[in-house]
Length: 194
Image (cartoon, rainbow, N blue to C red; front, side, top):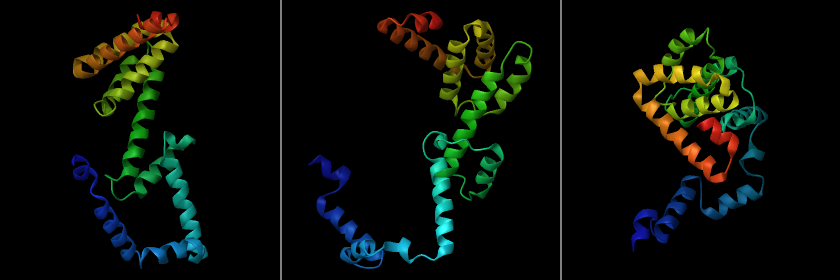
């Protein structure tokens, strides 16, 4: 049937599990006994425990949306420099978080006197990779302070001249937000999106 092609048969999964257990150092029963008897963590020397806790801290910092903890910029730059493979999952998460923070920071800094200074910084960011984050940040900023709506419109009009895809995406998202708010009878968001 069609499910075997996607997930493999039960025999193939069992064979892969047995092969993995053999490569790990023995049959499955010995591996389970090692875990019950204390496992690899109990046999590790004290120096490896510090490395393991450091690894777990870095893994926790990279998991989820900013890991729930503030990472200072100098530590974030140091963590990026320590990563050898720039295409690894950890490096991609770090670069994505840096892009998200940078775009949010730039949009939150925009005001009438400094819009001409913010635009070159904005164009230095990878706007095509962060187009969703960019649109979300613009919509949130406009919702938080509707008095700056003309300023955000001017910012979007300049960005739209270079990247029309961003203007189109923002239009689609604003229309979708308006429709959702109208159906929910949510007056503040409907007025802000209008």
